[in-house]
Length: 274
Image 1 (spheres, rainbow, N blue to C red):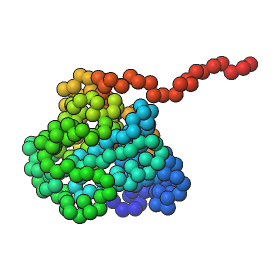
Image 2 (image 1 turned 60 degrees about the vertical axis):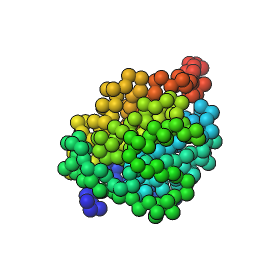
Image 3 (image 1 turned 90 degrees about the vertical axis):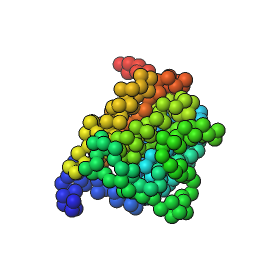
Image 4 (image 1 turned 120 degrees about the vertical axis):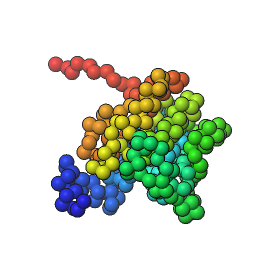
């Protein structure tokens, strides 16, 4: 898509251009650019920021953030960059983990994995190059169905508060969602999630009947006390970019701290004086 096509496809093209300029020139503080969406990979910034803010209000000193589907590693690098900035805003440290087979996509299992769009071997990783680039993130290499149980048993694991789901397939996404069936204390009471493959183009044609969207539906159908829901307030801020439609929140209703009050204590609405 050329520049003019992109320009006219944007609901507010001039605002988008201004936002990108502010981000590229790094005008203002990180917090300011976060609020107006003027950051690279703003979806990563959002889930990390919101998770750190929730952890701070719960008095937790550390959280974990996960990327399911690392591929070449660009997303993991941006998670590190955003985490470094966010740690300066909240008294919370962020541990980052990237889950991947290391060998690219497996072969699709059936139509739910969208074999008309994905093929086995896509997105292979250069592990040596990526490890040399990473500053803090830890790679967890292997089939997630095999690596997840041991990961959740780690004594040094801080509660998971942010997850990027980029496994592409329905089958792999379902395996990643097994995280949310783990012990409640391994997670924040609400976990902020980004699902990459839920919008796409006229080539992917993502729907509620295949891929990541179907995985979300099936997870919700199978779990009574944990649900992945839409943060509707964020969808109302569509001017920030299409990524707001790729954010979900996993609510752990059985979490012992789910009902802990974290909001403003001053919510009275007195009558004004005459």
